[in-house]
Length: 405
Image (tube, rainbow, N blue to C red; front, side):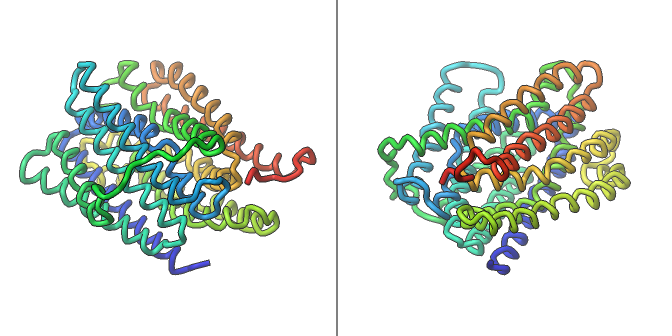
């Protein structure tokens, strides 16, 4: 294993996470709780649509560039991913222009920003799949630096309104893509039909869509169920901090995904690595939750300002979800490395239904704390579900082989 490669991923993720969180804190201070809640609402809508823009290719490009399980070559799948995001984004833009509704400009900007961002993610997936972790780290640092730089330029030279934040994000992504390659020279062409490829894509889309629903839909439901914008802003701020804490574990998960994939046909080696990752995922939340719960009020005020300090209780309670979220990262990487996305998709759909149901009944009664409970219960259910599937694959005698590769 390349320790230098893992180190570079930690550095890049730490840098990207730090810049992203600083920008979030800046948005919170400039927009205030109500506008920040509104901004988070539009970003959530964009994140949901980005599942279609991604189309499961983020995982597929990474996995197939590491060890192919299809007749299609890795470069063809990568080309297919680029064509997919362009087509889906154009369809979304046309649909938005045809059907008039409020804040149409913001929706168009969000769709464009997420589309360009998805292109940069596909480049990252290809580099990781080829084992070029150091190049991928440099790529992530470049894209985050340029997007953050242009966002800050537009905020302080033009306006801190939401649309100028999004325009800065768009320009930064466009410039970073030009650094990687000349987009105009790429021949966008969808490869011939391959049933196995498209079957995996459907499963991966279902997984991402179900995940984004039970992880992000609470923001939408808080607004839809009539909660005041300030409360939505508190919950959105707490969610972003939680995402940042999960984000610091992503380098380990994504780095070792490649090795789980390479060991997928060697059960003993696979399980040895998996068990080490699982132990780490069980220990890490203990330290994070303990510190975060004690200093939640000070941390919230430091990050977002005194206007947000009332929301620290939401953050302290939401931290409990980490006891499930971090182990879920490990089980997720393991199942996807074994081509078990269909099994994962079934569990994820159940989680989405559970989360929506919990939010529907708990939010009107308990407000943002109802959404917190919904998140914790859903993550716990996901752990039981995908953990059960994984261990069934290991011990069930009905499986002649435990991988679909």
